[in-house]
Image 1 (cartoon, rainbow, N blue to C red):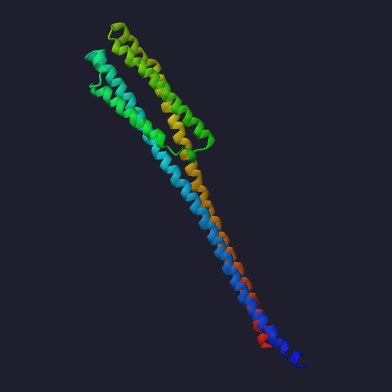
Image 2 (image 1 turned 90 degrees about the vertical axis):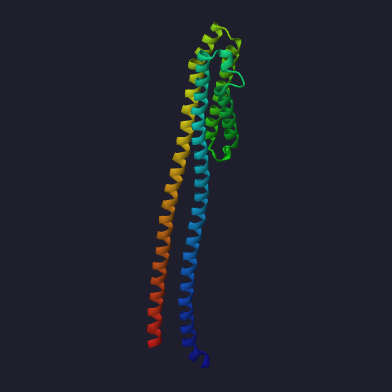
Length: 229
């Protein structure tokens, strides 16, 4: 008899505990959804920062591309004004500017975070470095011909500057622009994905809260009726 008499009390206690359990479950679901969204957002943010850094470096490479070509044209012009040998002498300002600029370009190329690139971007970067090697090979021929000092050598060197040299420069410019566009597209896609993930995460949190509230309210009503009885 005492066991039967106390059963409603235990049943009531169980219902009260179930309401609390539902509340705890809602809190856990909301926390889990928030943590998942935060982790995903941090990962995407880190990737975007890495891509932005790489994009800035590629933009710097593009500027150095123009500088190197500009200095070459300048010392080639000197060959027609102060003489070909003087144009490529160590104390020639324009030739020294070319050497300094291309040295800084190589430093920048070496500092590039290649690991952040996709396989296609790595292949494109390899093409860029290969094109620069070809450009410098042409430049070495130009310098050798100018150092020869003859008119025929000068004419041949001038032809290389505006011919094979320009061809390599235009290839480098095109390849660098393509790499920059690829990095920009990836960064934009990551940004869009991160925004979409935040939206989905917010929807999950709201849904969890609403479902939890509905469950708590339902249990509370049932419990209220039980207490009234």
